[in-house]
Length: 382
Picture 1: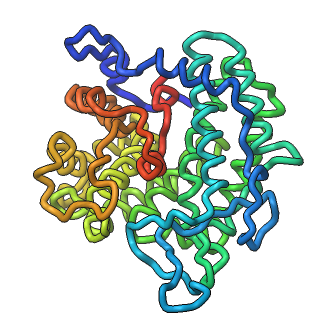
Picture 2: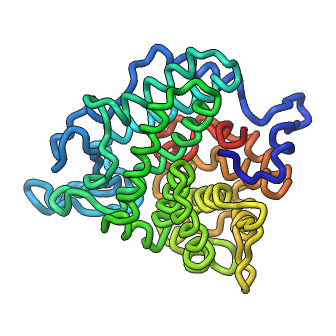
């Protein structure tokens, strides 16, 4: 699972001149893992989605920005209020998935730090129950995600809900390579993700999402790349790299390094951070010594480096951000995110480590956590 990381030593030996010799808060990782040891494993089958058109093993969610129609007696069809999350939507499956991802990631990181098998055993139980067990598994498809009441039972853009699963291959690879995950579980997970990846690449919803014009297509490619690495699908990996160079970067980044489609939303600041985070993750996963996407530059000079340069000043001080504030949660951004570590590891630039070290690494606001793809970057950089 090793990635091409030219300046990994800079990250792992970070010193912010205050005696903090590591960028990762290893004590906090272990504390979170210890806390989760007493929790019951989560599954989507724990919550029955009354509004779902699918069965109990089918993931279901409602569109974040869809609200009851004020002009009809029954509130149908729901109407869009971009950027404003509807508090009454069904998100139990999404919460269960994120809880599983976060706890498995912390268990795995804690095992790597301590070699205590209580953590690896817990991670394997959570993974087996969520993905593989007959009674509690999740189907490897996403037909009923981000449904809109009175409009549709699911949508292609709902595939963004499984963005949080990209941490799972990283965790599983570490556990299997360390000899603390049974081969049957590892191969079962590979089979699950191979089926889901095939569904993403062949079903209309997946094809639509891979071709979506804004951050949705970036996130779809991030998932495809992560799952393709895990399952050995070289064809999809090549597709992701080609699309980054020929479609995603040319069609979404402006000359100044900004992302106009995100700036046009009601949350221009948060969405700018979100899309850059995922663009950088794509570069991190797909770069090799012979095809380094961090250095790839279009003929007019646009590159991931230009995108980082555009946003960096506003991460240091967002008061200068020259666009309207986000309609919700503007004050909660920025937080520490993996793209800052990936940029430091790619370019050898300590400023990104200083930025990461000074930001909140464990935000509690649901909206912020929902838009943070990687929960434990330690797994990706070790």
